[in-house]
Image (cartoon, rainbow over all chains, first blue to last red; front, top):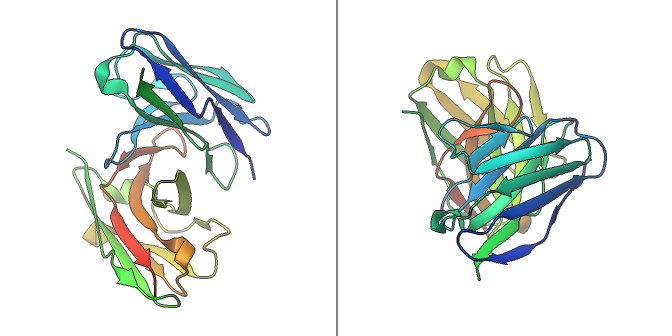
Length: 107
Length: 119
């Protein structure tokens, strides 16, 4: 199985800061990677698919980059509503696997 | 508006069975592949099972293979998960989620239903 490793586990940031979340794959996933945001008590929400394509309605401050084994989610200027847990997921090879998540919390 | 509404979660003893349902609306259900994804309390996300739009292709995570069965009824716009031989480690919120049009990511999610396996 492809193991997805996210770093850091927790990120403490202030509103307005730029945030970079990392997702590393144990083998290449090409660009078959998605990012999700999950707030407490809610279902995950798709942010990015194809490593860099924003889903419909996702603000432009969210961007995805990278391919292969090193992928990144960047939030250009963190808003109060962005404090949440973020997961990456590869869909390059069965079984699809998620990273363990990065929690973005208020500093 | 796309809606996915899960039901059927409950408290069940180890070794017991449960059937989850997911009612879909707001999109052409019969055209989309569907999935079950679960999340144990305080933990991350785990993909559980996949079914293609026509039910011709089905996949399971190794952790549930041989115990869970995914199915769908396109006439009823519904997705199901039959869960047998339940274990403590199956305790989780179970989400149904549709597959994306351009790949096997999950673009729409239900609100989840809680399955608790405990004696």
